[in-house]
Length: 226
Image (tube, helix red, strand yellow):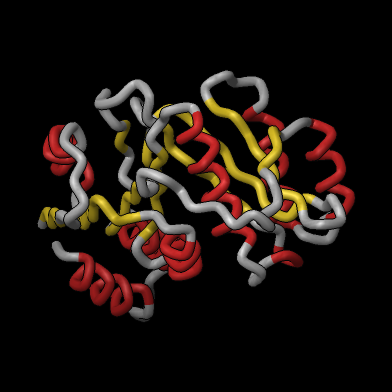
């Protein structure tokens, strides 16, 4: 069943008389889940990330930064949940957190960097197979609500790419195809699209996905599994 067909069926069925509220909610959740797994785009930073000399510097994230951000964003429930997730991640050694501060030293953007090899996409429930031990993935980026619309996301990931390239590491980042604000920031930062995955049945695309990632290229490639 295609996404379009599933969406139509779920829309029709969820409003059908006699259907319980629980059943309707389950159908809506299933539709959202399937749609959210439909398309993922993967981008690579250009060989030499261009930095603006006036860009603020990216700093390693500390627990003290999280405390400060919690106080500054006390009324922002989504940001507080994100900061809690960051705090839990400190106990793992497979990722490093970073922070972008504004001119006044306030935390305005957060991001994490992990190894490319073995990185798991929750959107398609798939872990990348080994291809380059030096490559890195930028992920879980977040700008507090009060600081959005000021280009912090693009600045932060551009800084992250430059930081990785100074360590002779390739920088990658991904986004859902329908996340317009994320895509805009990624392109503004100079990243180049490398892969486009259009997935209906995630399990069916895994082997093709993994094999193709071993040979990165600049032209968009699309898979659609019906």
